[in-house]
Structure formats: C-alpha cells, structure tokens
Image (spheres, rainbow, N blue to C red):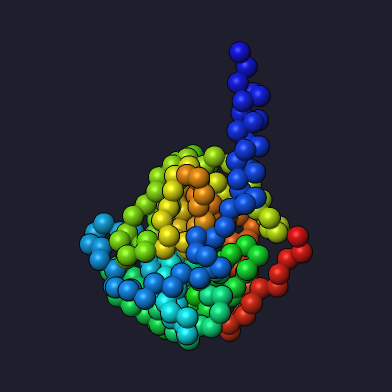
Length: 233
C-alpha cells in the first residue's frame, strides 16, 4: 500500500495547525513578576544562548535569545519581537558564563517575529548563522519560565505559513517551554538556523531563512535603533 496519500494528509493537517499557532505569550507579553536569576551550571548551557528580560510598566517579559557575530565583527542578540510589544524601559541580557548586560533594541521585524539587540559592551561568540533551509535533527534551546536551561530535540518536519505572514516558519517535532521564545535552533554543526517563536500540539515553530538575512542587512546598515517595515501579506 502506498504511503504517499498518508504523507499528504499529515502535511495538510500540520499546515492547518500552523495557521492557528500563536506566540508563546498571550498578547505577545510574558509578565512573570517572580523572576529570578538563571540557575543553570555554566558547563551545561550553550554559552551563546541567553536569557532576555524586558522590564516595563506591565512587569517583566521573559524570553531567550542567541548571541551571534555578524559580518564586520558586530555582535548582536537574536530573539523574538513579541517580547518587546509595549514600552522598553530596561532590557537586560543574561549570559550563563558572563552575567548580565544592558541591551537596546536595534531592529524589530514584527511580521516575522524577529528582533536584534545590541549590548552595552562587546562580547565574542563562535556561533555561526546558517540562513539555508535546515534539515535533519535540530536542537531548540532556551531558559524557560524559571531560568533553567533546556533543549527540545527533534527533526525538522517541514514548514508552514501562519496567518498574516509572508515567509513560512520552520516546524520541528518537539515542544519548547514558555520562556524559550526567542531562543535558538541549532543544527548538528552547532550553527544557528532559526529563532523560536511559538509551539502548538507538540510542534515548535521558528523563523528561519530570508527573514534572518533581511534582519542582518538592516542591522548592518543602521547602528541606531530602527523598526523594519512591515511586509504586505
């Protein structure tokens, strides 16, 4: 018996789920007033994966991010945009081996749920970004709601375009946690291939490919905080 019709049916179901998937935080906000510093042994965590704390009048929005080096040796933190909806009175990036740094928003792409942060001092990293379509086994990592580093491991199972988006999102089998949003997705070579933005029904969703390239180009061209123009859907 051919398995092709079954494969097509599974793909259609996954696309239908993706059209309804939401960001991990209701209304794009993650208020967690009981925030504590990350409690993770440095040797267990990828040193480039960080915790992102945005404090404003509504409380603290907690997420994750990844420290990457762009062409020209400019270092930024890649994370998700929905952590910054509302005021940005104080943004802190907490690295497992180096402690806390003040950060500022350099660019936001709300359509693709991406943001780039600049730190108040240079920090080096060896993480490379691969903007090609990822395949095979992937690892999605973050600091969760309580500052505990963990990774969800699973294969890429395709991509799907959620409502209002221009580019598709990567779909990974496995569930990340609330607070992992903005964290990195890595391939077997340790390259960053995506940025987590949501989860539904055992599937993690991440931004990848062309939106990452566009964000890099915008940050490279402008050292000042800026918002990426919204793309028509």
